[in-house]
Image (cartoon, rainbow, N blue to C red; front, side):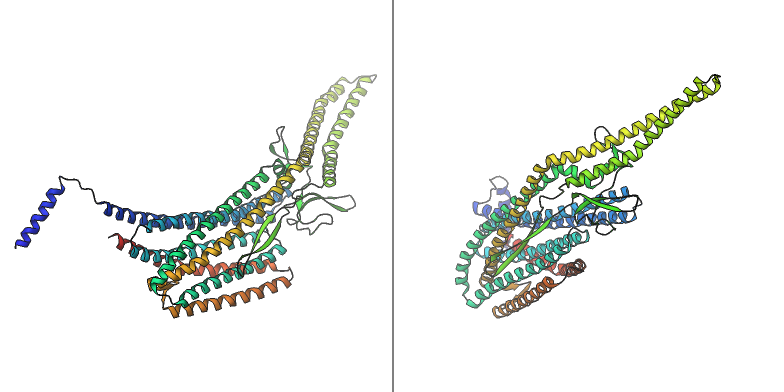
Length: 597
Protein backbone atom coordinates (compact mmCIF):
# COMPACT_ATOMS: atom_id res chain seq x y z
CA UNK A 1 0.00 0.00 0.00
CA UNK A 2 2.83 2.33 0.80
CA UNK A 3 4.41 1.52 -2.55
CA UNK A 4 1.19 2.46 -4.31
CA UNK A 5 0.94 5.78 -2.45
CA UNK A 6 4.60 6.49 -3.09
CA UNK A 7 4.19 5.81 -6.82
CA UNK A 8 1.15 8.04 -7.06
CA UNK A 9 2.97 10.75 -5.17
CA UNK A 10 6.00 10.48 -7.44
CA UNK A 11 3.82 10.69 -10.54
CA UNK A 12 2.00 13.66 -9.11
CA UNK A 13 5.32 15.29 -8.30
CA UNK A 14 6.65 14.65 -11.77
CA UNK A 15 3.49 16.05 -13.32
CA UNK A 16 3.61 19.13 -11.10
CA UNK A 17 7.37 19.54 -11.53
CA UNK A 18 7.31 19.17 -15.31
CA UNK A 19 4.87 21.98 -15.64
CA UNK A 20 7.15 24.58 -14.15
CA UNK A 21 10.75 23.73 -15.20
CA UNK A 22 12.81 23.43 -18.39
CA UNK A 23 11.69 20.31 -20.31
CA UNK A 24 14.72 20.08 -22.64
CA UNK A 25 15.96 16.54 -23.23
CA UNK A 26 19.54 15.59 -22.55
CA UNK A 27 22.20 15.96 -25.25
CA UNK A 28 22.61 12.20 -25.54
CA UNK A 29 18.88 11.65 -26.02
CA UNK A 30 18.79 14.40 -28.64
CA UNK A 31 21.71 12.85 -30.50
CA UNK A 32 20.00 9.46 -30.56
CA UNK A 33 16.70 10.94 -31.70
CA UNK A 34 18.35 12.98 -34.44
CA UNK A 35 20.37 9.98 -35.61
CA UNK A 36 17.21 7.89 -35.93
CA UNK A 37 15.45 10.73 -37.76
CA UNK A 38 18.39 11.06 -40.15
CA UNK A 39 18.28 7.32 -40.86
CA UNK A 40 14.54 7.41 -41.51
CA UNK A 41 14.82 10.47 -43.74
CA UNK A 42 17.71 9.00 -45.73
CA UNK A 43 15.86 5.71 -46.17
CA UNK A 44 12.71 7.53 -47.26
CA UNK A 45 14.70 9.61 -49.75
CA UNK A 46 16.26 6.47 -51.22
CA UNK A 47 12.88 4.75 -51.55
CA UNK A 48 11.31 7.87 -53.09
CA UNK A 49 14.14 8.13 -55.60
CA UNK A 50 13.62 4.49 -56.60
CA UNK A 51 9.90 5.12 -57.05
CA UNK A 52 10.59 8.26 -59.11
CA UNK A 53 12.99 6.36 -61.36
CA UNK A 54 10.43 3.60 -61.86
CA UNK A 55 7.80 6.20 -62.75
CA UNK A 56 10.20 7.84 -65.21
CA UNK A 57 10.74 4.47 -66.90
CA UNK A 58 6.98 3.95 -67.06
CA UNK A 59 6.54 7.42 -68.59
CA UNK A 60 9.20 6.61 -71.19
CA UNK A 61 7.42 3.37 -72.08
CA UNK A 62 4.12 5.27 -72.42
CA UNK A 63 5.75 7.83 -74.70
CA UNK A 64 7.28 4.97 -76.69
CA UNK A 65 3.87 3.37 -77.14
CA UNK A 66 2.51 6.69 -78.44
CA UNK A 67 5.42 7.06 -80.87
CA UNK A 68 4.89 3.50 -82.14
CA UNK A 69 1.18 4.19 -82.67
CA UNK A 70 2.04 7.42 -84.51
CA UNK A 71 4.48 5.54 -86.74
CA UNK A 72 2.05 2.71 -87.51
CA UNK A 73 -0.75 5.22 -88.19
CA UNK A 74 1.47 7.19 -90.57
CA UNK A 75 2.64 3.97 -92.24
CA UNK A 76 -0.96 2.91 -92.82
CA UNK A 77 -1.78 6.38 -94.15
CA UNK A 78 1.12 6.11 -96.60
CA UNK A 79 -0.22 2.82 -97.97
CA UNK A 80 -3.73 4.25 -98.32
CA UNK A 81 -2.64 7.62 -99.74
CA UNK A 82 -4.53 8.49 -102.92
CA UNK A 83 -2.22 11.32 -103.93
CA UNK A 84 1.53 11.81 -103.96
CA UNK A 85 1.20 14.79 -101.63
CA UNK A 86 -0.76 12.76 -99.09
CA UNK A 87 1.91 10.08 -99.36
CA UNK A 88 4.64 12.65 -98.72
CA UNK A 89 2.80 13.95 -95.67
CA UNK A 90 2.53 10.41 -94.29
CA UNK A 91 6.24 9.89 -94.84
CA UNK A 92 6.96 13.10 -92.95
CA UNK A 93 4.83 11.86 -90.03
CA UNK A 94 6.71 8.55 -90.10
CA UNK A 95 10.03 10.42 -89.93
CA UNK A 96 8.77 12.46 -86.96
CA UNK A 97 7.80 9.27 -85.11
CA UNK A 98 11.20 7.73 -85.89
CA UNK A 99 12.93 10.81 -84.46
CA UNK A 100 10.83 10.55 -81.29
CA UNK A 101 11.76 6.89 -80.83
CA UNK A 102 15.45 7.75 -81.20
CA UNK A 103 15.05 10.67 -78.76
CA UNK A 104 13.49 8.34 -76.18
CA UNK A 105 16.41 5.92 -76.62
CA UNK A 106 18.90 8.70 -75.87
CA UNK A 107 16.79 9.98 -72.99
CA UNK A 108 16.63 6.57 -71.34
CA UNK A 109 20.43 6.31 -71.34
CA UNK A 110 20.89 9.74 -69.77
CA UNK A 111 18.10 9.09 -67.28
CA UNK A 112 19.77 5.85 -66.13
CA UNK A 113 23.07 7.64 -65.54
CA UNK A 114 21.46 10.53 -63.67
CA UNK A 115 19.59 8.06 -61.46
CA UNK A 116 22.77 6.15 -60.62
CA UNK A 117 24.45 9.40 -59.58
CA UNK A 118 21.50 10.30 -57.35
CA UNK A 119 21.39 6.84 -55.78
CA UNK A 120 25.09 6.95 -54.92
CA UNK A 121 24.52 10.27 -53.13
CA UNK A 122 21.52 8.86 -51.25
CA UNK A 123 23.43 5.72 -50.33
CA UNK A 124 26.24 7.84 -48.89
CA UNK A 125 23.65 9.88 -47.02
CA UNK A 126 22.18 6.79 -45.37
CA UNK A 127 25.61 5.39 -44.51
CA UNK A 128 26.55 8.72 -42.92
CA UNK A 129 23.36 8.71 -40.87
CA UNK A 130 24.05 5.15 -39.79
CA UNK A 131 27.49 6.06 -38.44
CA UNK A 132 25.84 7.87 -35.54
CA UNK A 133 24.13 4.68 -34.41
CA UNK A 134 25.65 2.21 -31.96
CA UNK A 135 27.72 -0.73 -33.21
CA UNK A 136 24.90 -3.23 -32.90
CA UNK A 137 22.51 -1.00 -34.86
CA UNK A 138 25.13 -0.35 -37.52
CA UNK A 139 25.68 -4.06 -37.95
CA UNK A 140 21.98 -4.94 -38.12
CA UNK A 141 20.70 -2.03 -40.16
CA UNK A 142 23.76 -1.95 -42.42
CA UNK A 143 23.26 -5.54 -43.46
CA UNK A 144 19.51 -5.11 -43.99
CA UNK A 145 20.06 -1.90 -45.93
CA UNK A 146 22.56 -3.55 -48.26
CA UNK A 147 20.13 -6.39 -48.89
CA UNK A 148 17.36 -3.90 -49.70
CA UNK A 149 19.66 -1.78 -51.84
CA UNK A 150 20.79 -4.82 -53.84
CA UNK A 151 17.20 -5.96 -54.37
CA UNK A 152 16.04 -2.47 -55.38
CA UNK A 153 18.95 -2.10 -57.79
CA UNK A 154 18.24 -5.50 -59.37
CA UNK A 155 14.60 -4.56 -59.87
CA UNK A 156 15.39 -1.20 -61.42
CA UNK A 157 18.08 -2.73 -63.64
CA UNK A 158 15.50 -5.23 -64.92
CA UNK A 159 12.96 -2.47 -65.57
CA UNK A 160 15.55 -0.39 -67.42
CA UNK A 161 16.59 -3.42 -69.47
CA UNK A 162 12.96 -4.03 -70.43
CA UNK A 163 12.59 -0.39 -71.48
CA UNK A 164 15.85 -0.59 -73.47
CA UNK A 165 14.71 -3.72 -75.28
CA UNK A 166 11.31 -2.18 -76.02
CA UNK A 167 13.06 0.80 -77.61
CA UNK A 168 15.29 -1.54 -79.65
CA UNK A 169 12.13 -3.36 -80.75
CA UNK A 170 10.44 -0.09 -81.70
CA UNK A 171 13.50 0.99 -83.72
CA UNK A 172 13.41 -2.28 -85.64
CA UNK A 173 9.68 -2.04 -86.28
CA UNK A 174 10.03 1.59 -87.39
CA UNK A 175 12.77 0.77 -89.89
CA UNK A 176 15.45 2.76 -88.05
CA UNK A 177 17.93 -0.12 -88.28
CA UNK A 178 18.98 -1.88 -91.47
CA UNK A 179 19.77 -5.60 -91.74
CA UNK A 180 23.52 -5.23 -91.15
CA UNK A 181 22.95 -3.05 -88.11
CA UNK A 182 20.33 -5.51 -86.89
CA UNK A 183 22.85 -8.38 -87.09
CA UNK A 184 25.39 -6.29 -85.18
CA UNK A 185 22.77 -5.37 -82.62
CA UNK A 186 22.00 -9.05 -82.01
CA UNK A 187 25.71 -9.83 -81.75
CA UNK A 188 26.22 -6.94 -79.31
CA UNK A 189 23.33 -8.22 -77.20
CA UNK A 190 25.08 -11.58 -76.94
CA UNK A 191 28.36 -9.86 -76.06
CA UNK A 192 26.50 -7.94 -73.36
CA UNK A 193 25.19 -11.25 -72.00
CA UNK A 194 28.73 -12.64 -71.98
CA UNK A 195 30.12 -9.57 -70.20
CA UNK A 196 27.36 -9.61 -67.58
CA UNK A 197 27.90 -13.28 -66.83
CA UNK A 198 31.68 -12.93 -66.72
CA UNK A 199 31.18 -10.17 -64.16
CA UNK A 200 28.78 -12.36 -62.18
CA UNK A 201 31.35 -15.17 -62.15
CA UNK A 202 33.90 -12.75 -60.71
CA UNK A 203 31.42 -11.58 -58.06
CA UNK A 204 30.32 -15.07 -57.00
CA UNK A 205 33.98 -16.13 -56.90
CA UNK A 206 34.76 -13.22 -54.56
CA UNK A 207 31.93 -14.33 -52.26
CA UNK A 208 33.16 -17.93 -52.26
CA UNK A 209 36.67 -16.77 -51.27
CA UNK A 210 35.24 -14.93 -48.27
CA UNK A 211 33.11 -17.87 -47.17
CA UNK A 212 35.90 -20.41 -47.67
CA UNK A 213 38.24 -18.34 -45.49
CA UNK A 214 35.99 -19.27 -42.52
CA UNK A 215 37.06 -16.21 -40.55
CA UNK A 216 35.79 -15.61 -37.04
CA UNK A 217 33.15 -12.84 -36.75
CA UNK A 218 35.56 -10.47 -34.97
CA UNK A 219 38.26 -10.95 -37.58
CA UNK A 220 35.70 -10.55 -40.36
CA UNK A 221 34.40 -7.42 -38.63
CA UNK A 222 37.83 -5.80 -38.70
CA UNK A 223 38.28 -6.71 -42.35
CA UNK A 224 34.77 -5.43 -43.10
CA UNK A 225 35.77 -1.96 -41.95
CA UNK A 226 38.67 -1.92 -44.40
CA UNK A 227 36.66 -3.36 -47.26
CA UNK A 228 33.81 -0.90 -46.66
CA UNK A 229 36.28 1.96 -46.84
CA UNK A 230 37.49 0.60 -50.18
CA UNK A 231 33.88 0.25 -51.30
CA UNK A 232 33.23 3.86 -50.33
CA UNK A 233 36.17 4.99 -52.45
CA UNK A 234 34.95 2.90 -55.38
CA UNK A 235 31.52 4.50 -54.96
CA UNK A 236 33.17 7.89 -55.32
CA UNK A 237 35.05 6.67 -58.40
CA UNK A 238 31.81 5.40 -59.82
CA UNK A 239 30.10 8.72 -59.16
CA UNK A 240 32.93 10.57 -60.93
CA UNK A 241 32.63 8.28 -63.93
CA UNK A 242 28.85 8.66 -63.96
CA UNK A 243 29.10 12.44 -63.64
CA UNK A 244 31.58 12.55 -66.53
CA UNK A 245 29.29 10.31 -68.62
CA UNK A 246 26.30 12.46 -67.77
CA UNK A 247 28.22 15.53 -68.90
CA UNK A 248 29.30 13.75 -72.08
CA UNK A 249 25.72 12.68 -72.71
CA UNK A 250 24.46 16.22 -72.27
CA UNK A 251 27.17 17.50 -74.60
CA UNK A 252 26.12 14.90 -77.15
CA UNK A 253 22.51 16.08 -76.79
CA UNK A 254 23.61 19.69 -77.23
CA UNK A 255 25.63 18.71 -80.29
CA UNK A 256 22.56 17.04 -81.76
CA UNK A 257 20.51 20.14 -80.98
CA UNK A 258 23.11 22.15 -82.87
CA UNK A 259 22.58 19.82 -85.82
CA UNK A 260 18.81 20.26 -85.68
CA UNK A 261 19.13 24.03 -85.17
CA UNK A 262 21.20 24.49 -88.32
CA UNK A 263 19.46 26.40 -91.10
CA UNK A 264 20.63 23.60 -93.36
CA UNK A 265 18.61 21.09 -91.34
CA UNK A 266 15.37 23.07 -91.70
CA UNK A 267 15.93 23.55 -95.42
CA UNK A 268 16.71 19.86 -95.89
CA UNK A 269 13.44 19.05 -94.13
CA UNK A 270 11.59 21.31 -96.58
CA UNK A 271 13.18 19.32 -99.37
CA UNK A 272 12.69 15.76 -98.13
CA UNK A 273 9.17 16.42 -96.80
CA UNK A 274 8.19 17.95 -100.15
CA UNK A 275 7.41 21.25 -98.45
CA UNK A 276 7.31 23.05 -101.82
CA UNK A 277 4.42 20.94 -103.06
CA UNK A 278 2.28 23.89 -101.94
CA UNK A 279 2.68 27.47 -103.06
CA UNK A 280 4.43 29.77 -100.60
CA UNK A 281 3.75 33.46 -100.04
CA UNK A 282 6.28 36.29 -100.18
CA UNK A 283 7.48 35.41 -96.67
CA UNK A 284 7.96 31.76 -97.58
CA UNK A 285 4.88 30.58 -95.66
CA UNK A 286 2.83 27.67 -96.96
CA UNK A 287 -0.43 28.92 -98.49
CA UNK A 288 -2.06 25.49 -98.65
CA UNK A 289 -2.56 25.89 -102.42
CA UNK A 290 -1.08 23.01 -104.40
CA UNK A 291 1.81 23.75 -106.77
CA UNK A 292 0.75 21.49 -109.60
CA UNK A 293 4.08 21.69 -111.41
CA UNK A 294 5.98 20.32 -108.42
CA UNK A 295 7.76 17.00 -108.83
CA UNK A 296 7.66 14.88 -105.69
CA UNK A 297 10.88 13.55 -104.23
CA UNK A 298 10.84 9.93 -103.12
CA UNK A 299 13.02 8.07 -100.69
CA UNK A 300 14.23 4.59 -101.58
CA UNK A 301 12.78 2.91 -98.49
CA UNK A 302 9.40 4.57 -98.95
CA UNK A 303 8.87 3.64 -102.60
CA UNK A 304 7.11 0.52 -103.78
CA UNK A 305 8.68 0.79 -107.24
CA UNK A 306 11.83 -1.07 -106.31
CA UNK A 307 15.32 0.35 -106.44
CA UNK A 308 15.56 3.01 -109.17
CA UNK A 309 18.48 2.80 -111.56
CA UNK A 310 20.13 6.04 -110.46
CA UNK A 311 18.84 6.19 -106.91
CA UNK A 312 20.42 4.45 -103.97
CA UNK A 313 19.40 3.63 -100.42
CA UNK A 314 19.05 6.75 -98.28
CA UNK A 315 18.67 8.96 -101.34
CA UNK A 316 15.87 11.35 -102.24
CA UNK A 317 15.19 11.18 -105.97
CA UNK A 318 12.68 12.08 -108.65
CA UNK A 319 11.65 10.46 -111.89
CA UNK A 320 10.43 11.79 -115.20
CA UNK A 321 8.97 9.85 -118.10
CA UNK A 322 9.30 11.09 -121.66
CA UNK A 323 6.74 10.83 -124.46
CA UNK A 324 8.15 7.45 -125.47
CA UNK A 325 7.60 6.01 -121.97
CA UNK A 326 11.25 6.05 -120.92
CA UNK A 327 11.68 6.83 -117.20
CA UNK A 328 14.77 8.51 -115.79
CA UNK A 329 15.59 8.46 -112.07
CA UNK A 330 17.80 11.21 -110.65
CA UNK A 331 19.17 11.54 -107.10
CA UNK A 332 18.80 15.06 -105.63
CA UNK A 333 19.86 14.72 -101.99
CA UNK A 334 21.23 12.07 -99.68
CA UNK A 335 18.93 10.90 -96.93
CA UNK A 336 19.43 10.19 -93.24
CA UNK A 337 22.66 8.27 -93.68
CA UNK A 338 23.93 7.03 -90.35
CA UNK A 339 26.43 4.49 -89.18
CA UNK A 340 26.35 2.53 -85.95
CA UNK A 341 29.93 2.06 -84.81
CA UNK A 342 30.73 -0.73 -82.35
CA UNK A 343 33.64 -0.52 -79.91
CA UNK A 344 34.89 -3.14 -77.46
CA UNK A 345 37.02 -2.56 -74.37
CA UNK A 346 38.14 -4.64 -71.40
CA UNK A 347 36.34 -3.15 -68.40
CA UNK A 348 37.41 -5.71 -65.79
CA UNK A 349 39.74 -8.73 -65.72
CA UNK A 350 38.24 -11.17 -68.21
CA UNK A 351 35.26 -8.90 -68.89
CA UNK A 352 34.84 -7.17 -72.26
CA UNK A 353 32.18 -4.57 -72.91
CA UNK A 354 30.84 -3.73 -76.37
CA UNK A 355 29.03 -0.49 -77.06
CA UNK A 356 27.64 1.22 -80.12
CA UNK A 357 27.49 4.88 -80.96
CA UNK A 358 25.85 6.62 -83.87
CA UNK A 359 27.82 8.64 -86.40
CA UNK A 360 26.59 10.52 -89.43
CA UNK A 361 28.87 10.80 -92.46
CA UNK A 362 29.33 14.33 -93.76
CA UNK A 363 27.23 13.17 -96.72
CA UNK A 364 24.19 13.33 -94.41
CA UNK A 365 21.58 15.33 -96.42
CA UNK A 366 24.32 16.31 -98.87
CA UNK A 367 23.10 17.68 -102.19
CA UNK A 368 23.82 16.18 -105.58
CA UNK A 369 24.64 19.36 -107.55
CA UNK A 370 23.86 17.82 -110.95
CA UNK A 371 20.68 16.30 -109.55
CA UNK A 372 19.56 19.69 -108.20
CA UNK A 373 20.10 21.31 -111.62
CA UNK A 374 18.12 18.54 -113.32
CA UNK A 375 15.35 18.81 -110.72
CA UNK A 376 14.97 22.58 -111.10
CA UNK A 377 15.08 22.25 -114.88
CA UNK A 378 12.35 19.59 -114.77
CA UNK A 379 10.08 21.78 -112.65
CA UNK A 380 10.75 24.78 -114.93
CA UNK A 381 9.80 22.61 -117.89
CA UNK A 382 6.52 21.78 -116.15
CA UNK A 383 5.88 25.48 -115.53
CA UNK A 384 6.58 26.28 -119.16
CA UNK A 385 4.39 23.40 -120.28
CA UNK A 386 1.48 24.39 -118.04
CA UNK A 387 1.38 28.03 -116.91
CA UNK A 388 3.57 29.20 -119.81
CA UNK A 389 1.40 27.45 -122.36
CA UNK A 390 -1.77 28.75 -120.63
CA UNK A 391 -0.47 32.32 -120.87
CA UNK A 392 0.53 31.82 -124.49
CA UNK A 393 -2.93 30.47 -125.32
CA UNK A 394 -4.63 33.35 -123.49
CA UNK A 395 -2.47 35.89 -125.30
CA UNK A 396 -3.22 34.26 -128.64
CA UNK A 397 -6.92 34.30 -127.90
CA UNK A 398 -6.77 38.00 -126.99
CA UNK A 399 -4.70 38.81 -130.05
CA UNK A 400 -7.11 36.93 -132.29
CA UNK A 401 -10.08 38.82 -130.87
CA UNK A 402 -8.25 42.12 -131.21
CA UNK A 403 -7.69 41.30 -134.89
CA UNK A 404 -11.39 40.55 -135.28
CA UNK A 405 -12.21 44.00 -133.89
CA UNK A 406 -9.59 45.65 -136.10
CA UNK A 407 -10.88 43.88 -139.22
CA UNK A 408 -14.47 44.89 -138.44
CA UNK A 409 -13.42 48.50 -137.98
CA UNK A 410 -11.54 48.48 -141.33
CA UNK A 411 -14.52 47.15 -143.25
CA UNK A 412 -16.04 49.51 -145.87
CA UNK A 413 -19.43 48.89 -144.43
CA UNK A 414 -19.10 48.99 -140.67
CA UNK A 415 -21.41 46.77 -138.66
CA UNK A 416 -21.49 48.73 -135.43
CA UNK A 417 -23.36 46.01 -133.58
CA UNK A 418 -20.80 43.39 -134.59
CA UNK A 419 -17.98 45.73 -133.63
CA UNK A 420 -19.44 46.36 -130.18
CA UNK A 421 -20.11 42.67 -129.67
CA UNK A 422 -16.53 41.83 -130.64
CA UNK A 423 -15.15 44.53 -128.35
CA UNK A 424 -17.27 43.26 -125.45
CA UNK A 425 -15.24 40.05 -125.44
CA UNK A 426 -11.91 41.84 -125.07
CA UNK A 427 -12.08 42.57 -121.27
CA UNK A 428 -12.77 38.94 -120.48
CA UNK A 429 -9.91 37.79 -122.68
CA UNK A 430 -7.63 40.38 -121.10
CA UNK A 431 -8.63 39.06 -117.69
CA UNK A 432 -7.70 35.58 -118.87
CA UNK A 433 -4.29 36.90 -119.90
CA UNK A 434 -3.84 38.67 -116.57
CA UNK A 435 -4.90 35.55 -114.65
CA UNK A 436 -2.53 33.36 -116.68
CA UNK A 437 0.29 35.86 -116.17
CA UNK A 438 -0.34 35.91 -112.41
CA UNK A 439 -0.35 32.11 -112.33
CA UNK A 440 2.93 32.06 -114.27
CA UNK A 441 4.43 34.64 -111.93
CA UNK A 442 3.43 32.55 -108.89
CA UNK A 443 4.85 29.42 -110.43
CA UNK A 444 8.11 31.19 -111.30
CA UNK A 445 8.28 32.61 -107.77
CA UNK A 446 7.84 29.08 -106.43
CA UNK A 447 10.65 27.82 -108.64
CA UNK A 448 12.79 30.71 -107.45
CA UNK A 449 12.02 29.79 -103.82
CA UNK A 450 13.04 26.19 -104.45
CA UNK A 451 16.21 27.38 -106.18
CA UNK A 452 16.96 29.71 -103.25
CA UNK A 453 16.57 26.82 -100.84
CA UNK A 454 19.12 24.74 -102.69
CA UNK A 455 21.45 27.73 -103.11
CA UNK A 456 21.26 28.48 -99.38
CA UNK A 457 21.95 24.84 -98.53
CA UNK A 458 25.00 24.91 -100.79
CA UNK A 459 26.21 28.07 -99.02
CA UNK A 460 25.63 26.49 -95.59
CA UNK A 461 27.23 23.15 -96.50
CA UNK A 462 30.55 23.88 -94.76
CA UNK A 463 28.86 24.82 -91.47
CA UNK A 464 26.64 21.77 -91.76
CA UNK A 465 29.60 19.46 -92.28
CA UNK A 466 31.44 20.94 -89.27
CA UNK A 467 28.34 20.51 -87.09
CA UNK A 468 27.95 16.88 -88.14
CA UNK A 469 31.61 16.21 -87.33
CA UNK A 470 31.18 17.84 -83.91
CA UNK A 471 28.20 15.60 -83.18
CA UNK A 472 30.08 12.48 -84.24
CA UNK A 473 32.97 13.39 -81.91
CA UNK A 474 30.55 14.03 -79.04
CA UNK A 475 28.76 10.75 -79.75
CA UNK A 476 32.03 8.78 -79.60
CA UNK A 477 33.11 10.67 -76.46
CA UNK A 478 29.86 9.64 -74.78
CA UNK A 479 30.50 6.03 -75.79
CA UNK A 480 34.00 6.20 -74.26
CA UNK A 481 32.59 7.75 -71.09
CA UNK A 482 30.20 4.81 -70.78
CA UNK A 483 33.15 2.42 -70.91
CA UNK A 484 34.61 4.31 -67.95
CA UNK A 485 31.27 3.89 -66.17
CA UNK A 486 31.33 0.16 -66.84
CA UNK A 487 34.84 -0.12 -65.42
CA UNK A 488 33.89 1.79 -62.28
CA UNK A 489 30.60 -0.09 -61.91
CA UNK A 490 32.18 -3.51 -62.30
CA UNK A 491 34.88 -2.65 -59.77
CA UNK A 492 32.24 -1.40 -57.35
CA UNK A 493 29.88 -4.37 -57.71
CA UNK A 494 32.76 -6.82 -57.29
CA UNK A 495 33.84 -5.10 -54.09
CA UNK A 496 30.24 -4.87 -52.94
CA UNK A 497 29.86 -8.64 -53.24
CA UNK A 498 32.88 -9.09 -51.03
CA UNK A 499 31.47 -6.63 -48.47
CA UNK A 500 28.10 -8.39 -48.51
CA UNK A 501 29.81 -11.72 -47.85
CA UNK A 502 31.84 -10.27 -44.96
CA UNK A 503 28.74 -8.61 -43.56
CA UNK A 504 26.96 -11.96 -43.64
CA UNK A 505 29.84 -13.59 -41.74
CA UNK A 506 29.75 -10.81 -39.14
CA UNK A 507 25.97 -11.06 -38.80
CA UNK A 508 26.08 -14.84 -38.60
CA UNK A 509 23.29 -14.92 -41.16
CA UNK A 510 23.82 -15.43 -44.89
CA UNK A 511 20.91 -14.19 -46.97
CA UNK A 512 21.19 -14.63 -50.74
CA UNK A 513 18.35 -13.79 -53.13
CA UNK A 514 15.91 -13.73 -50.22
CA UNK A 515 16.89 -17.12 -48.77
CA UNK A 516 19.04 -17.99 -45.74
CA UNK A 517 22.02 -20.31 -46.17
CA UNK A 518 24.76 -21.90 -44.12
CA UNK A 519 28.31 -21.13 -45.26
CA UNK A 520 28.55 -24.46 -47.07
CA UNK A 521 25.11 -23.93 -48.58
CA UNK A 522 26.07 -20.43 -49.73
CA UNK A 523 29.25 -21.76 -51.36
CA UNK A 524 27.28 -24.47 -53.15
CA UNK A 525 24.71 -21.91 -54.29
CA UNK A 526 27.44 -19.60 -55.63
CA UNK A 527 29.10 -22.50 -57.46
CA UNK A 528 25.77 -23.34 -59.11
CA UNK A 529 25.47 -19.71 -60.16
CA UNK A 530 28.96 -19.81 -61.67
CA UNK A 531 28.16 -23.02 -63.51
CA UNK A 532 24.95 -21.48 -64.85
CA UNK A 533 26.82 -18.33 -65.95
CA UNK A 534 29.40 -20.43 -67.79
CA UNK A 535 26.64 -22.26 -69.65
CA UNK A 536 25.02 -18.96 -70.61
CA UNK A 537 28.37 -17.68 -71.89
CA UNK A 538 28.85 -20.85 -73.95
CA UNK A 539 25.38 -20.51 -75.54
CA UNK A 540 25.95 -16.80 -76.24
CA UNK A 541 29.24 -17.51 -78.00
CA UNK A 542 27.53 -20.15 -80.12
CA UNK A 543 24.81 -17.63 -80.95
CA UNK A 544 27.43 -15.10 -82.09
CA UNK A 545 29.03 -17.66 -84.42
CA UNK A 546 25.64 -18.37 -85.94
CA UNK A 547 24.82 -14.68 -86.38
CA UNK A 548 28.19 -13.92 -87.97
CA UNK A 549 27.74 -16.68 -90.55
CA UNK A 550 24.04 -16.05 -91.26
CA UNK A 551 22.88 -14.13 -94.31
CA UNK A 552 20.97 -10.88 -93.87
CA UNK A 553 17.67 -12.28 -95.10
CA UNK A 554 15.07 -12.43 -92.35
CA UNK A 555 17.44 -11.09 -89.70
CA UNK A 556 15.07 -8.26 -88.77
CA UNK A 557 12.17 -10.66 -88.24
CA UNK A 558 14.49 -12.86 -86.14
CA UNK A 559 15.57 -9.89 -84.05
CA UNK A 560 11.98 -8.79 -83.47
CA UNK A 561 11.01 -12.32 -82.46
CA UNK A 562 13.96 -12.59 -80.04
CA UNK A 563 13.31 -9.20 -78.46
CA UNK A 564 9.62 -9.92 -77.96
CA UNK A 565 10.50 -13.23 -76.28
CA UNK A 566 13.17 -11.63 -74.08
CA UNK A 567 10.82 -8.83 -73.02
CA UNK A 568 8.16 -11.40 -72.11
CA UNK A 569 10.65 -13.37 -69.99
CA UNK A 570 11.96 -10.27 -68.21
CA UNK A 571 8.46 -8.99 -67.48
CA UNK A 572 7.53 -12.41 -66.07
CA UNK A 573 10.46 -12.12 -63.64
CA UNK A 574 9.42 -8.69 -62.31
CA UNK A 575 6.91 -9.94 -59.69
CA UNK A 576 9.60 -12.07 -58.00
CA UNK A 577 12.04 -9.15 -57.99
CA UNK A 578 9.34 -6.85 -56.63
CA UNK A 579 8.61 -9.32 -53.82
CA UNK A 580 12.29 -9.44 -52.83
CA UNK A 581 12.34 -5.64 -52.70
CA UNK A 582 9.17 -5.58 -50.61
CA UNK A 583 10.47 -8.24 -48.21
CA UNK A 584 13.90 -6.66 -47.73
CA UNK A 585 12.34 -3.21 -47.33
CA UNK A 586 9.85 -4.55 -44.77
CA UNK A 587 12.66 -6.18 -42.79
CA UNK A 588 14.67 -2.94 -42.85
CA UNK A 589 11.63 -0.84 -41.89
CA UNK A 590 10.80 -3.17 -38.99
CA UNK A 591 14.37 -3.12 -37.68
CA UNK A 592 14.57 0.65 -38.05
CA UNK A 593 11.29 1.10 -36.19
CA UNK A 594 12.42 -1.25 -33.43
CA UNK A 595 15.69 0.68 -33.05
CA UNK A 596 13.75 3.93 -32.81
CA UNK A 597 11.63 2.71 -29.87
